[in-house]
Length: 236
Image (cartoon, rainbow, N blue to C red):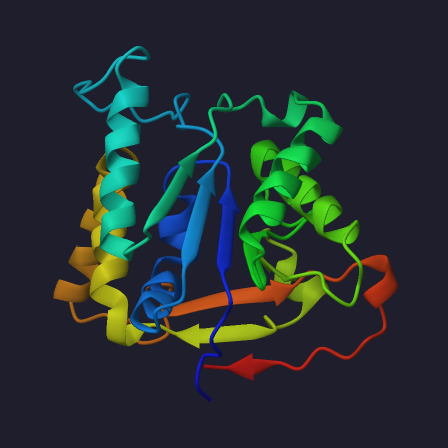
């Protein structure tokens, strides 16, 4: 099946590099289809654990490093509209819920997206991820059912497969995998070690055809007034 076109795609994640792991491939595919994409990154990930060994950054310098990495990653993904929302890393869970919902609502009202990508509530592990997912879901819930955008979530908790089943949407991004790799490499302060391990696996001839570098997976996030409606599982 062919990936359907969209009116506008809105991506909302809390940290730089969340997007590279989750949607870098499909974002590049949207670019090739001339679909406008906006990425709202809520923080600069300034509390990221990795400062290097020996250290390449301090707590004071890391935010600027990660800001530049985020810009470079968006260039690799061909995201034309990057919004840095200015919230503080590891504090989103403590933000007022209504403030977070209104932040998302303002983006939706401005952009009128037909689909939104974020994290799947209760299956996103990190507190900032969960707070983001909760705000996005609530903002979408308040929109009339007949006109609300589709909400697709990334889920990676250990119990995801057992409780949610197979992802509803699976996208083969192998054709644009090189761009996903570049996006991940752009976030070098956080991903350099992991990318080195991946390169080693490839060099050793380990099979990668079904790896996270070739496939991106999403679940449809249903609202209470949508529960019970059948969800078709599709592969693109």
